[in-house]
Length: 243
Image (tube, rainbow, N blue to C red):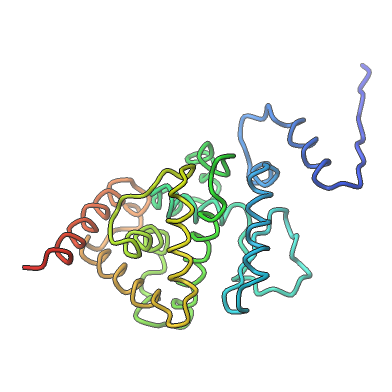
């Protein structure tokens, strides 16, 4: 049996990654590694870099597209989002699939894979979802406003957050022209000097409380996500049309 092995060398990292991705495009299961090779993932990373160039130090977060890419960069690990973690953020906030994000992390690509890092997605949506989780984690770690009591519900928190910022549960299609403006309003709320996100997260917690106390198992089910949507709509209706 003759076996031919091809060695491909290129000084251009992007070219090498495109070849690897094309060689493995018949793989049945798309792992986080191959999602990281997607053209959209590269654009998302560039978007993060562009935002960081203008952001204050407290608002900088990083997308680690390749494993251990920032290992020796000296960044706080809480500011680094690998492909899997960013996918969970996006699925929770933008796709309204917080129950998938709350499940075993390896399952995120089998449950939501086709909707992640799509060519037509706006990069700002990925950045907004990661920044929201980062900001909420700072409240959890600082034990502020009882955020530490919602650590298991953090995916649902960022799902609700976008609704609270916009005052409604409607969300534009990720590929639409309205999506970038939608994301920018979320980003602005998370980076403004007066920190409106703190009160917004309190509202998120209130909406979740009104849904009841979910079991660990129910957090991984679509029913709780649907119940949360209904409670959010009730909250907005009550506050927009007070008796």
